[in-house]
Length: 95
Image 1 (tube, rainbow, N blue to C red):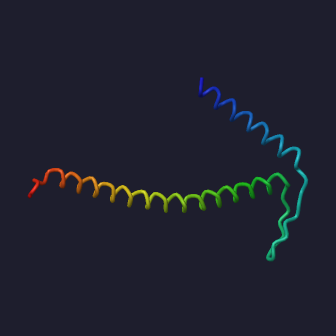
Image 2 (image 1 turned 45 degrees about the vertical axis):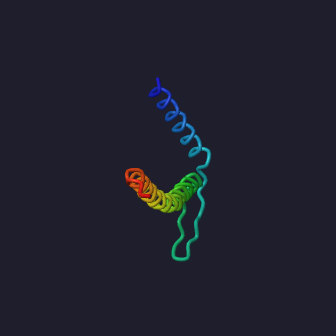
Image 3 (image 1 turned 30 degrees about the vertical axis):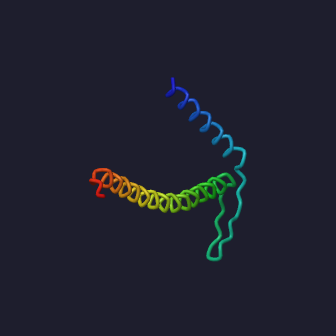
């Protein structure tokens, strides 16, 4: 059932993407400093959305790696504290 829903969502996205491309087929010139490119509006929008998504993934992955490193350090410290508590509990009491 889940596979059918995923397939249905994929087909709907595919159809809406095709409709978007057909409705936005006007040609637009992109003027870079070194060249001029003429592409359909739909291709330009999809390309810039993809670039934005990649930049978002890169930005969030840097944050995630930093948090993962911090989490590993905290786990290491917690394990050290647990070991110290175990050692203190097994030590005989001296008067």
